[in-house]
Image (cartoon, rainbow, N blue to C red):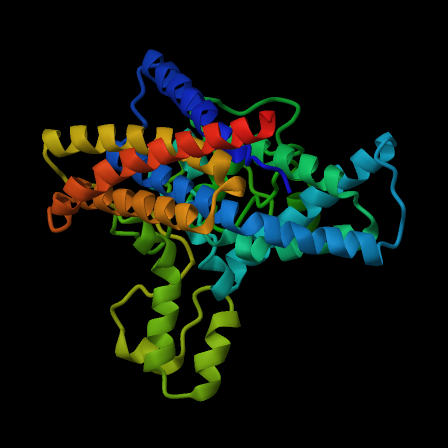
Length: 392
Ligand SMILES: [Zn+2]
């Protein structure tokens, strides 16, 4: 296992790209960013990076074990055919994970976070459910059995993820020649739209040929502008609640429904399915229906300029600390990982609270911020200690 997690270094890179997109849109005279939506998206992205740092080493170990002990074909890393086969293989597995994640209740709960944003810009790319990787990694295991060398898988997976970043923008229109073959901002705008005609379309990661082959392709229509977000509104800026939104509804139905079969099966039924007795109890509740809807007022609570300024500064501090924290996470002791995780998540929850103009947890900041600075200093000294031991 590497001593460093390079995902941490992606944070400043993505921040720079977001500033570039913001500048380009301003030059075009368009305003497509909303402060509270962007902060919520970035908060979700940081939660994902932390959960990935905790999970990936263990799930990748399963991939390596399968490849070492049960691979069917010996693909050579030096052979370009290997890279082509597994470029297609990784993209194909992603398509099916993504499609099933939209269509099964329990998996939609691990993906819905990516779709909750009601604006569409580069911050949306970072807005991911923290638990998505806990489910998605299983979908790539057939590649290990087929014989995908682990290094090829890692590179292709990173390429897939990096490629998807630029899809989340409204600053780029349709691109001739590659529309309908590669994923583009236009095809992915359709994927994020909640208009009935666009719901559950264009699952492709790098290629959309899978959508064309398996009947889920839908081009963006000039007379049907995209309205972003989920059919059921999020109605919170708390990133932890956002991550648990769908599962908490499933849990409520599990408790409420009388039939034992439904208590279990509802988690594995098509997204939106609810037990008949729960539907009868909540006749006016939109529930988990996923049939699409037209535009509606966005969730945009107002707060004071002072609180927005505080949240902006707090987020900048959190980004700096998280860059180092995630980068160094493989070599940190358990107590330091746990401390960093609690301090970061606490800050993101409080930021969401302040943007909803609530102050119930504000007092915690008097303790959390000095602790976060101390934590950053402890990262610095841990690195210096490790370097001095290496140089001996
Ligand atoms: Zn999706």
